[in-house]
Image (cartoon, rainbow, N blue to C red; front, side, top):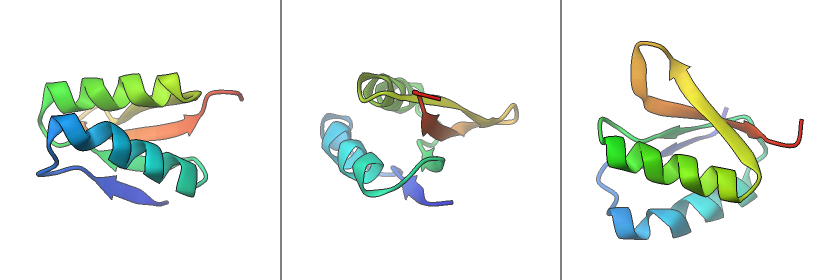
Length: 72
């Protein structure tokens, strides 16, 4: 599974990075947001706008999202 790690990424630049990544790779893939609630919210909004869905990697890891195709 492909992974995008957003640790250290500036919030105002994240949309460009995420959009480029999601259109280069086929879901499912993982986006690591880290502990930042704001970063996780930004990524969730971006993937929804582009027709994808997200869920937490697991209930103990809130810093990683699994992205799947929203059309399934």
